[in-house]
Every structure is written in structure tokens, then in C-alpha cells.
Image 1 (tube, helix red, strand yellow):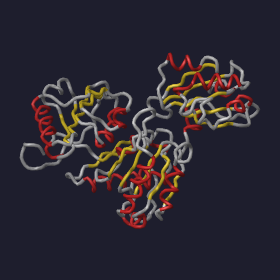
Image 2 (cartoon, one colour):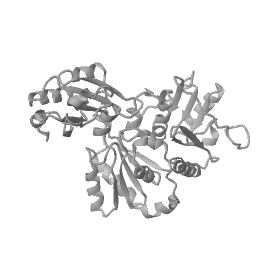
Image 3 (cartoon, one colour):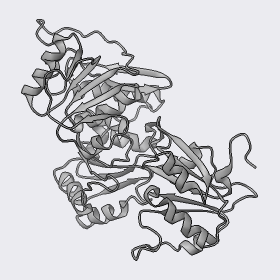
Amino acid sequence: MNSHGAPHDPYLVGLDLRGRRVVVVGAGTVVQRRLPVLLAAGADVHVIAPEATPAVESTPGIVWHRREYTSGDLLGAWYVLAATNDPAVNAAVVAEAEAQRTFCVRADLAREGTAVTPATVAADGLQVGVLASGDHRRSAAVRDGLRAVLTGESDGAPSNEGRKAGLAGSVALVGGGPGDPDLITVRGRSLLALADVVVADRLAPPRLLAELAPHVEVIDAAKVPYGRAMAQQAINQVLIDRAREGKFVVRLKGGDPYVFGRGFEELEALAAEGIPVTVVPGITSSIAAPSAAGIPVTHRGVTHEFVVVSGHVAPGHPDSLVDWDALGRLRGTVVVLMAVERLAAIADALIAGGRRADTPAAVVENATTGGQRTVRGTLATIAADAASAEVKPPAVLVVGATAGFTAADPS
């Protein structure tokens, strides 16, 4: 490892990175996999790169220095990751880190760094890391086996290789759930572990990508709200092309593939090409976000209905397919996804349709993740309340009597 003689067994250790400066040089798919783990550890993460994938660019909690790496960038760092596509830059980062006695992972040539990233699994309060002398496929396979044992999924079923044989040339549309990686279904996680290629949305739980083996191709679908977006036709073509190459492709989405996820469009495109498709439902944030905030979408004697609406098109816009007047007349719970930029217009439309201005309302941001927070108010105030709190997507709007419930007093 590095320049200190023959390879040797590394010393496994857990680092306390809370509040400590971590410098990441590069902003591609490797970094996209590592950021969620670093942020979950509480690190003060600084990314240095002139360009970034949309998923990295939109990751909350990082500081992005949009420029090339220069000598001196590692000053004060406790831990460093060199992950550019330029070996010379990575070597320079490792050299500077070593000169100031800071441990550094080199993503393109692990043995030349002073630290290595293990394949990890977390379950029931345990964190397990696996190193296999640079054999990333082996460490990932052992990690997956350990996960199966720790989660009780090991039942004598065929090996991953045996199961994977029947998946070549097919696609799975997998709902990743609302954000917490533990809220993906067992089947979804199992298929993800078998993937050759993963095409991921920004809202797909990012820590799931950190669990993938290094040989898995990760394609960022770049579906950043109000920002850059990979055209749906291009996404369809990527799925088709990789499947035709004999790969098993997982299209990983946030929530459920069919709840404003355009999953059926992808299924239609694949079916037209004769490519087998498996659809794995996911937990939709329309129910999970309110639940995580202590808000039931229904409650006996209070509401017998809830409606899920897309807020990506403003009320009154000619492209809107929502009958906002009808929603205003409902007595039950209204859940609106993709509503942050149009909260005021949506609230006004519901009030104009007949909903009382003092109806309880809540906005749940980054539901089920470490960044979750809830802003509460009324239909008349929720837009201003959310703006004052600087709420950002992804967030879910909940309107109705139950939005005023708390765990202590659900009445």
C-alpha cells in the first residue's frame, strides 16, 4: 500500500468525523456513492471539482468549491478522498495528504493511497466493513452475504451468481422508498445487489448507491427539480441499450415507480423492444413523509379519504390536470408532492375552492432522513412559514385536520 514496501493487511478502524473537515477531490459517480456515508457520519465535507454530476451538485450539506484542485486545498483536513478521472491529480492529492499526515483514499488506485474504503453493511446497530486486498468484487460479495445473515434473509436460496443468470438482458424498475435506505423493500434491495447497471434518480436513497460493488455502472438520471434533467427518451434508451448488452439493469427511483415516477413510460418503451421488465413497488413519500412526521393521512372519525396530487404544474396553468376546486371541497387529507415552489398558489387555489383558511397544514422536508424537519401552520400561512424556514425540495405538503395532529394529542 502506497510507497512503504510490500502490500500488507490494513488496520481497520472507525473514524469519528463529526464536525471534522473532509476534503473530496472530484465529483463523479464514485463521489456520489461516498458522500451519503460521509454526511451520515457528520463530516464537514468540502468537494473540490470544476464540474459535478447533478446528484453531487444537489447534495445537501456539502460545500462545493467549483474549481480545479490546487496545492494547499487539504489544509486542516482530517480525511481526504482523491476521486478524479486524472491519475496525476489523484497522485498529487495523495502526496499532499501524506506530507501533512492526513489519511487519503485514492479511488482509482487503492494501493497508492494511505487508506482504503471497505465494503460496508449496517444492521441492528452493527457496522461491518470488509476488505479483500483490493479485490472489490470479493469484498462486495462477502458484504452482501453478511447482510443476508444479519437481516435474516439467508435461507439457503441460490447464490447471487445463480440468481443473476436469469436476469441478464432484463430491467427492474425499483422503488427505493422515501429516503431512509432501510425502507426499500427486501426484493428491491435483493435485485439492487445483483445489478450490473443502476440508473438512479436524485431522489433515490443515495446510501443505497454506496452499497454497490465498484464494478457496477452507476448512471445519474439527472432528474434534479428545476435544474438539469436527462430527457425521458434518453433514459429509456439507456435502459434499452444496457439490457441489449446482456446486462441486468436496475432503474432506481425514489418512492414508488408509478407515483409521479414515469415508471410506466419506461415499461412501455422496454416492452416495445421485447425486453423483460420487473416492477418492484416502493413506499411512496405521499404516505411515508406524513407518517414520519407523526401525521396520519386518515383517522377514524376525522377523515375517510386522502388524495395525492402533483404540484409540479401550478393551479390555473393550461397544462394542469388537477381539479383544484374539487379538492377544495373535500373534507379529507390532501397530500401534494413537488409543491415547494408553488405553495402559495396551491394554498390559494384550495381556499378558493372552499377549504377553510384555518385548515391545519404541514410541510415535511427530507422525510425519513437525517435532515428531516417539519414546518406546521395553516392553509393561509403555510407558504410564508415554509419560506421563512427556507424549506427546499424534496418536501411534501399535507393539508387537513390530521396535519394538526401530534403524537401526544391526536384529537
